[in-house]
Amino acid sequence: MQKVIILYGAPGSGKGTQANLLASKFDLIHFDTGKFFEAVVHDPKNQKDPQIKEERKLFDSGKLMTPAFVLETVKREAKEIHKAGFGIVFSGSPRTMFEAEGLVPELIKLYEKKNIHVFVLDVPAVESIKRNSSRMMCRFCGYGLLSAYYDVRNPKHCPVCGGPFYKRVLDNPETIKIRLKEYNERTAPIFGYIKKQGIKQLKVDARPAPFKVYQKIIKELGIK
Ligand SMILES: [Zn+2]
Image (cartoon, rainbow, N blue to C red):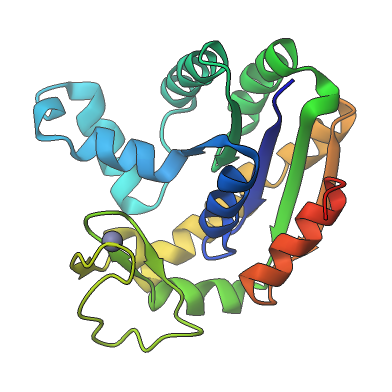
């Protein structure tokens, strides 16, 4: 039976990096909620759809999108991935209590409770703001340059694909503050709900280098 790994953490906690590492380790599909919906709401083909336009406004301001819309989409994607025979690593879902109450029972049905693991990547707010405000993303492959290890003032080429970098609208300091508030007020309450479902959940200090955080997660999953 395949695994489901759900990663939580404030913006800049390194969810995306850990998700990519875990996806290649366990052959999981990485469902990156932020990246997925960024593509949906910014797709020129969708701009005539009034709901998408509303969702785009929410998304670009750093607010969470309409839970019912998100839940329906993520559930559909999860079922597709399960049908294709893969496990999933989520970075960014479920993000509200409404989504958790809809998605978690579905995941238990598909993958069984014992195969679901939740990790909360813990970073202080100052660190989150610092990491995000200097974040540069590759426009082509989505790779994020780790600002703690590279000079991000004027990076020329993505080290993965050679593509150009850009700074996301989401990563300006005012928007990061809104995202942090949304995370603390609307996402963090889910942790109690997940515990009540009897799903394993572990808080991990996400300040060390990503490879160290990764080693901790792997150890918890019982793999060396
Ligand atoms: Zn790239």
